[in-house]
Length: 121
Image (cartoon, rainbow, N blue to C red; front, side, top):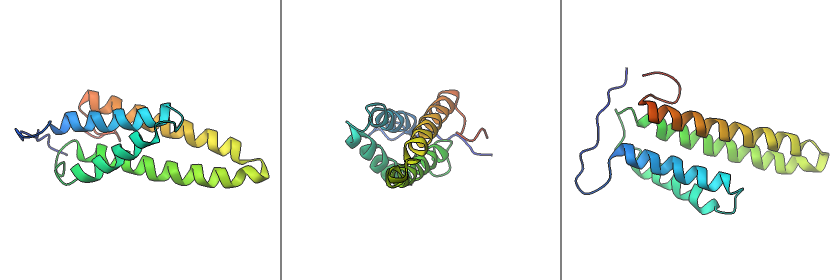
C-alpha cells in the first residue's frame, strides 16, 4: 500500500499541485490537437524533474502513468502515421488518440479521488 506523504516544501508548490499542473499541461497539448504540443513536452519534462521528489507517495504512480501514456501514445501515433500509406493508419491513429485521452481522464480523476491511476489506494 502506498502512503500519502504530502510535500511541505515552502519553496514550491505541493506535489498534488505539481501533479495537477502536469495533467493540465498534458491535456492542453493533446486537446489542442498538437497545436500546443509544447505544453505536453513541458508536462513530460516536469514529470521527469519531480519524479524523484514523489517517490514513496501516492503521486509517484501518477508521474509514471503520465510518462508511460506519453511514450506509448507517441509510439502508436508515429506508427499510425507510417501506416497511413496502407490506409490503416487513420484507424489506428484514432484508436491511439482515444486511448491517450482515456488514460489522461482516468489518471486525473484518480488524482482528484486521492488514489493511484491503476485503482490501487
